[in-house]
Image (cartoon, rainbow, N blue to C red; front, side):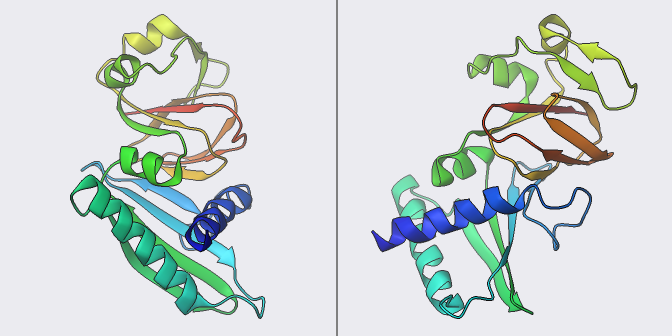
Length: 196
């Protein structure tokens, strides 16, 4: 029960902080950074100043959950890279070998791959996306499917996202804050980003 509580704490931190600010670095807000090799780096930034918080206890519980996950899947798919407490702010960095590991660990929808692979995985691409470069320009399902080898992130979480290449299109609930920065503003439905 305690492990579930800690996992829920981490997920809650992610959800609560994702909307804070729109253009900071990974060190100042909770972020998912997508690497070209498929890895997803999850940086959690959370107020940890209450007296009843215990960093050592949290680290122990997170490491235990990671170990259980890695044992269950048969390889080291998740690592806890760092955790530090500075001026009452917790910064914890975890690396997932793929979006599927993040999705399975947190039980939260997350996909990163080609448009073709997203379609084959059953993601609904009957959507309208806004251009990140040309205001007022949109694309629909057929345009999206024609971009089969472009990369797409699909997320159901209000969080800051950093793809490894320039953002081309995004759904209406995504605020593009830079060439490779975006903030998902609605964690209730699937959000989409297509990038180079």
